[in-house]
Amino acid sequence: MNLFGGTISSLEKGLNYASLKNKTIAQNIANVDTPNYKAKNVNFEQMLSDAKEASTISAKRTDARHYDFQIQQSTPGVYSYDNFNYRSNGNGVDMDAEQASLAENTIYYNALVERVSSKFNTLNTVIKGGR
Image (cartoon, rainbow, N blue to C red):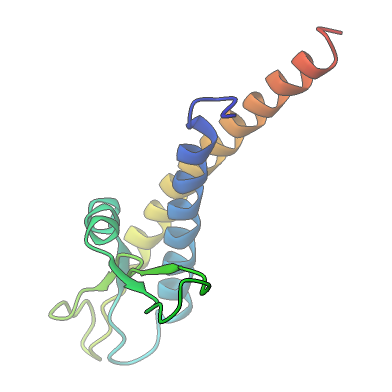
């Protein structure tokens, strides 16, 4: 039974994306002074296309009593700017752009968290019978 029609699942995927983007931004900020470090970014469209093209590995069943399983392998959609040098030491991190991206991503993440929270509050109200 799906209580919210896939809404929670969609919000979960959005939270996973925002979390991965936040980790990537934090990694860029941590390496702002590392020579030859190339800034990384997460692209939602790339993650979506990677998920569609994810390779599936299936187990070979040699007996009917063996369990059938499949594993999907995919890449998370993180890419680096290989040809971009922001500084003379080869570093490609623009601190102002990273901080702006972090602020934007934080707002997005908090909005998703509030939406999930409201969905659970609605469920809690239904369980309690409107009290």
